[in-house]
Structures are given as structure tokens and as C-alpha cells.
Image (tube, rainbow over all chains, first blue to last red):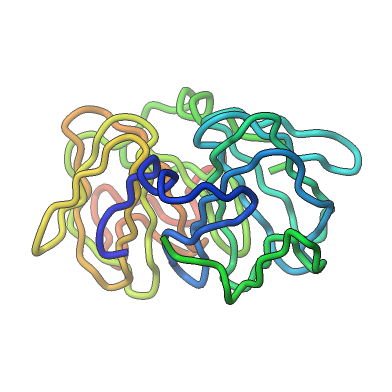
Length: 122
Length: 122
């Protein structure tokens, strides 16, 4: 990241939902942006915690025992090993921090899965 | 982080400037919030990249060869080893993402330095 990133401009660069794009790398972690709409699949990450910060809109992180609703300017960490299913009724813009090796559907290969090595920089 | 964090509420919990507060931990990294006003000191971090995201207001990250001005919704990574001096003309609210061991004045002990082990959770 030689130059600053303007988050709203970065979100304008893609339309796909559930397809995280990488905007920065630091200390073996990626900063990623994703558009959420509808329902993701239930999954967990065996060895990685995952940070969600809502930049625009509202999302729900479904956990097996409760739902966490996040609005703009709110954040939450899903600890490693915890099953979760993100969803959003309307399109929402989300910033995530994750280790470079984190797949967005965790240990599970699903029809929504984008392989880590195919995740795009924008 | 068992519950979500509402960033604006977290920023209401403290007044000090240049005193990062920890709000979340993931994968050996901390998410920290700080209020910037005035000028920090020049410093660098030998082994750590540092991520700055402006939540409110405007900051400038002075580098030796240029200035990077960040407004709300903009972010920037200062790579390890790169000297920098943050500043803000008016109070600004900043989210940072750093390894747990990162001191906020880098390798330098200054009158602004808060020891890593004294950095507070909020």
C-alpha cells in the first residue's frame, strides 16, 4: 500500500457479494473489503480469528447461540473455531482483518468459496 | 471481545490524545483506538507495519519524503522501518491495527510514550 486507500472508492470497484478483495497487507494479515447481501454459509476457521467492521449498512453475524447485529461504525471478532454465518438483508459494506491464509468459508469448500490464492487485490 | 464494539461509544470513554486504547485482539494483533490532536513525535517501528484508519476528522501522516492526508473513511499502512510523525490540527479519531508488542512511539522512548504493558483495554 504505497498510497492511501479511500474505502468508498474501493467499494465502487466491484459489485460481487461474498467475494473479499484485498486492500492492504501488514504483519502477515490482510485488510479486506467485501459486500454482503443475503446469507453466507455456516463455517468456522480452525486457526484464525476474524474481525468484521461495518463501513455501510447493517449485517448480522449469526452464532449458534445468538445473533450479533452490526451497524455502521460497529465491529466484532469471531474467535477461531466458532461457527458463524454472516447475513445482510440489504447490501452492506464490510472491512475485515484476517491472516493471509484465511479462506472466507473457513475449513469448508462450498459453492461460495473463493480460493485464498484467487482472492484479488483492488 | 465477547460483545460488539460501537466505535463512537468507545471514543466517548476517554479524552487523552496520543494514548491508544485496546478494543479487540485477534491473531496476535490488537485493534486500538486513539485520539490525535497536535503533533506526535517522529518514530519508526523496526519490525511492525502499522495500519491507520480515520474514523472521524482528518490526520496527516508525515513521512520523510511526503505527507499523507487521511480523512474519515481513509486508511494507510506505514511499513516497518519507515519514519513517520502523525499529526492532526483538530481532534481526530483513529483506529489502528498493530501486533500486540507494538509500542506507539516505536523504538524511541519519549515523553509521550506509554509502555506497551500499560496500554489499557476499554
